[in-house]
Amino acid sequence: MARLPYLDRQDLAPEDRKLLDRNINLFRILTHSPNGTRAFHALGGYIRNGSKLDGRLRELAILQVGYLARSPYEWSHHVKIGKDFGVTDADIHALVAESEGKTSALEPIAKTVLACAREMTNDGAASAATFAALEKALNKADLTDLVITIAFYNAVVRFLATMQIDVEPDYQPYLDEYPLPEA
Image 1 (cartoon, helix red, strand yellow):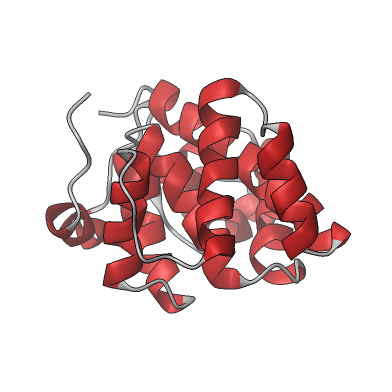
Image 2 (cartoon, rainbow, N blue to C red):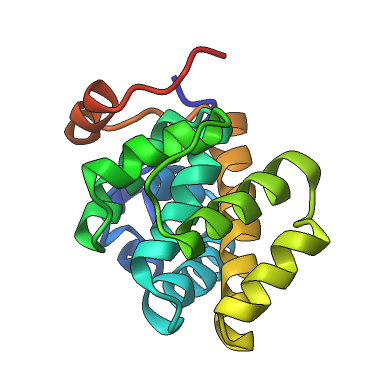
């Protein structure tokens, strides 16, 4: 149960109602701070729609953060979104294997993106070796956008956990198909 009440459009001032055009629980909590929601939407919108970083790699990085944080909300939402951007069932299984220190059939850049997400999430920063590998594989803009994405979603999972935001019923099937490990 969320720590604050979920807001609906009618709970908001008329000028803020557009903030709930995508009526998901995350935004229904964020709108307690309309200006904070606008800032959140600006960066999140850039990551999803403005960045030139490959969408599949972006979603793998986000999924890695959600998996490590054991965030049911983030994981379920981005399993769905990831599939829209080319993440396959095999990719998800490979991400789990890579997270457990096992090998997978992922291509080298995907493995390096996952390593970067793991290091930033677990250690606070990517290692020199991982960063150097990314520099060889990505242009500077894509590399910067990858780091922005991982940092942003590390903030998102902490917000979700602190606010105890519930997974919507429409996203539960993704958790059922791809369960998170026990804490």
